[in-house]
Image 1 (cartoon, rainbow, N blue to C red):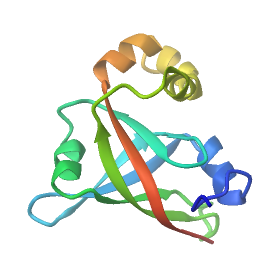
Image 2: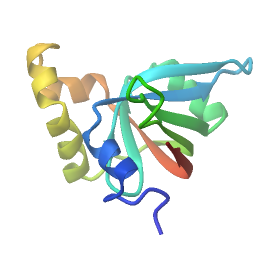
Image 3: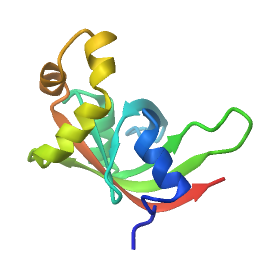
Length: 137
């Protein structure tokens, strides 16, 4: 059974929300939060990253992470996930990367003024985040 059911309120938020906070831990023990794009497939989350990003060094040293969605501004609709992250050496399945890029296509083309293919070249590392516990309120 999945930690987060895709049809549940938290599952729907993971499908529709564009950005989240990924918190990793630096070598000196200081938590470091990064705003990230992501894709949820009902089981795990994928995050594309630049290969030189500090979050990748942090994950290599300590794979325990937290993943959070912003609330509704009034203390509700919060989702907090404890998870284990891993850097995937091989490319994820093409349909998974395709879904990730499709989720952000308009922002990639209009705000970043690039193409999904160019973005993927720059953000060529992939992090898989496997939830172990989720809290929603």
